[in-house]
Image (cartoon, rainbow, N blue to C red):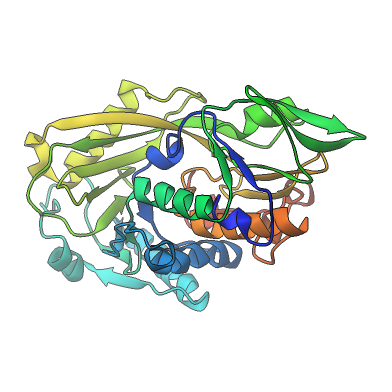
Length: 368
């Protein structure tokens, strides 16, 4: 994103409270996909996926992109009807997707629990072949190196303390290392959008939660896709090092904690073992939590804030990593021109007043 902000703009500074890649970029499960229902979301996330597909060459940095596909398991006849609706919507919107039957799911994921007494039977799956994973640290470092070469000042260990306001307009920020003035100020702080908005004097329709993830000890290659089960609320993929990367739903209580609570972790791991009993002997290697900013319609926010001169890129929920290339592109357009890119316009903050929301929670089942 920082690299993209240089397009059409000069004298760009990026302020990072901690260290490069130390925020949610370094705390996610690296999945990238564009399997959304509404046309507005498809335009945003599929642009991001297309940009990811050429990002390694563009940055001359190996981001370890692996398009191994994402499979969303279907566990009842009623869900199969909704899955067909979802696949049709994606295809109509120009995004490739397949509806797999049980035999095809068994062929692709033979280690799943297909026992007659399985708690969640398998009827089929939604499959997006272009989805997959990318190395999160490499994405951050590749972008940072490219931005640095374009003259961007990346200032780490620098905390924004307040926004400078003159004549009712944001004209810069006061930081722990001094003041920085700018014609336009951008706020892209996944996990702290509400806290920074409060410093600027307004409220956002955002609730922040902890989202946990964990990885197992490494094992030999056994699993070559990204699999999510809406019924168990668990998703899993295998890293290039052999670890099983495991994630699930949000912690129920709003929080800025970055560790999460044990009951939610137990729920996620229970779901994993329902799907893959053979993982029962795996030992966890590490666990972590990140803070996600969730909006009422589970879609991000782009646009000028209630404080003129201050622009927002936030509210991504769990979609921030997969949305980085497109988010950076449309946010760069906002900062360089002061106006919306055609893709970011539907995601303006004003949709919460007009009611023109993009409700992916209802459309694609993206709960966060």
